[in-house]
Length: 156
Length: 258
Image 1 (cartoon, rainbow over the protein chains, first blue to last red):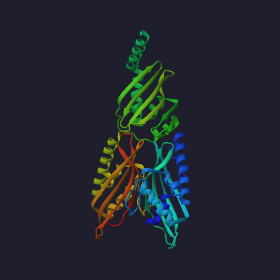
Image 2: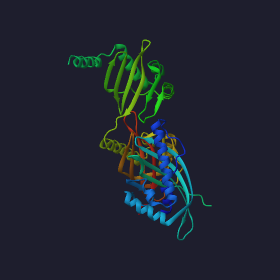
Image 3: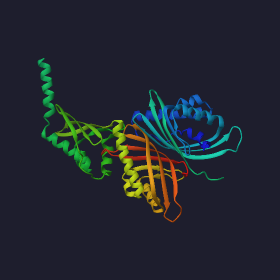
Image 4: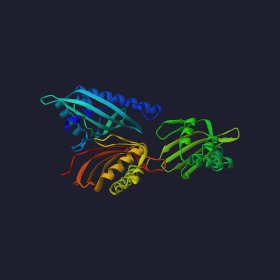
């Protein structure tokens, strides 16, 4: 189950416009897209500290089959383990939804990836959906809720 | 002192002296929205009208007319906490409908009172109030699910809701969700089900519920009962009538329960 975690934690860059239309909603959308970009890049280069910079202190991560990850310290352990275990040579992201509401942004999408264990084992192909809740904390956007589920991956 | 007293008196009187033709126009315009009465709303709305919506977006008169033409007549709007401030040929009207504060600026245009600007703001309850409302809606969901009642479930979804279950295509829109639930209940009897809310994040006029579920299902074709448990994140949106409905829902499964 952990095999899907790395991709799950690399969030999609929204491809569609926000549902709002106001200048502030557009600015919030753009800011979250920028945060997603930087967060994703942090994961790709295995930079735990940079990735954790986008995580709120009261983060809740909900992974299929695992107990909820509650709080930043639990997230830190998860990130360190994942980045030490896998490389991500392939990652396809399809963003489907972006909703701006107050000082929060909700994103929904599909991820698909190939994970390569750093030590041994065959590459793993995984796919699923995510819903991510971003919250503006001061001048920064951080993730407060993250949920993913599975989608069956066609066999090659 | 006299100047101050005069000002206070003037404002006090202004608040209470609403011209009869304006009073009539205000009542007609509120009713026009509820009844989807495009002609009346058009007559009482200035061409340069702008509506600032609860989410911060704006709508022009033309855009609102499109929305009104597509709307269906509904029940009369319940108006409370109304206050009108008269400032010459301008009136500032504020009032509350269930879940929303409305501020409307009226001006006299060629002998007709018209609204030039309106702003709708959500009446955001405190976290306890929102939690209570979500708990009540979630309880209705649980009861309907346990009964296998797709129609009742659908009263808790918006028309554009999206349901994202693991290993299924997305159910997009009320019709698709209803059909999917109907198919599910045709295939399964819900022996038991529980949905437990762990916390709620309030985001403007939305509330994001994090929870877990457990259920036992018996196939109607005679197969063995199956148990499942998992987690969910549900995004609820406050509706104009003050109710809360689901706009997005995603769940995952922890696999079969022991």
